[in-house]
Figure 1 (cartoon, one colour):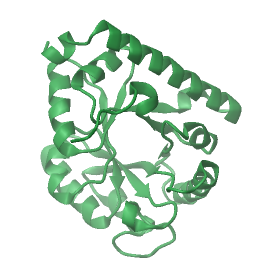
Figure 2: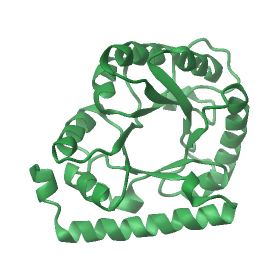
Figure 3: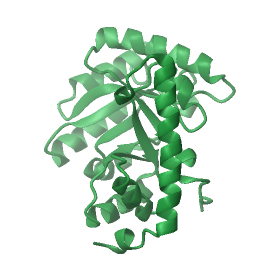
Figure 4: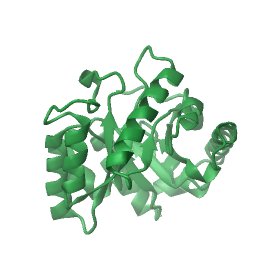
Length: 248
C-alpha cells in the first residue's frame, strides 16, 4: 500500500461519505422523477486537482468510476491509485491533444472527449499498438454547434469535426469501441434547453449506432436536468468532493 492509501484521514473520509450520500440521493430522486431505473445512471467522480488519497477513499465507499481532465495530473494519479491496489474505471473527460494519446491510453478505460476524425485516428493507432482490448470512446457533441469549446457539430458534413464523420471513424477503428456521446451544457443556456437539444441529437445518433447508448451529460449543478433527458452518466466534482483547490 502506498501513502495515498495510508493517509486517507478519517475526517476526509467522513466528508466524502457525506457528499456521496447527498449526490446519490439527488440521482435517485432525479431518476424517480423521470420514471427511470436508478441502475441506468452511473456517477463519475471528477477528481481533477484532488489527491490520489481521495480516489482511494471514494473507491472504499463504493465509487467505481473516476474522471480526470488533464493527462499530466491523471497519469501520475492513476499510477498512485493502482499502487494502492485500487482499480477504478478511469474516464478521460478533458480536451485531448493528439500528442497525449499514447499516455492516455495507458490508464484510461474511456475517453469521453473525442471531437475530430484526426483525434480518433491518433487514438486508434495508439490503442491498437498499446492495449490488449479496444478503448471505449464517447464522441463529444457541441450542443450549440460552436466548436471553439470542443465537440463535434451535429448535422454537419465537415470531414473532420462533423458528428457523423467522427462517429463513423470511431466505429470503423479496430482499436476503439464507439460507446456513445458526451456533452456539456453551453454557457448561458438553461440546462433544460441544452439537454432537450442533446436528447434529440442522441436519438438520431442511436438510429445510426444502436449499440452506442451511453450519454454522458450533467454535472454538479445540472445533473437532474440531464437525467431527465436520458443521461446514463453524470460527472460530479464539487458536489461530491467540495470546493476545488486552486489550480496552479
